[in-house]
Image 1 (tube, rainbow, N blue to C red):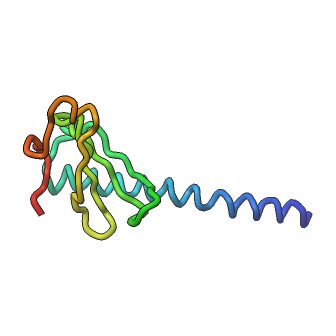
Image 2 (cartoon, rainbow, N blue to C red; image 1 turned 90 degrees about the horizontal axis):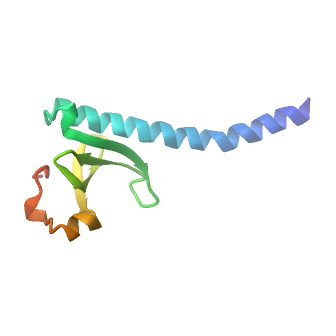
Length: 110
């Protein structure tokens, strides 16, 4: 009986961080999606993807947004307290197409 309790305890200890990370990625993606729809007034069809990310660097959690009208640009959002657009990244394919910072349509002036 003690053996099974210990096995269960070890499993719970190893699985808990996985669920913590997955839950936070989902929470951050949902916060940013809500912000884009309700505060920035984007329509759902204008947003290609919103993905919660767990990274090595601080902050640990952030969100990457790609808009339909800019499929070669990834916008980075933080959603720890308030949601804010932090930076952006033009993909290699976008750079090859000649997209520059001056072409960006969804950048938020802070």
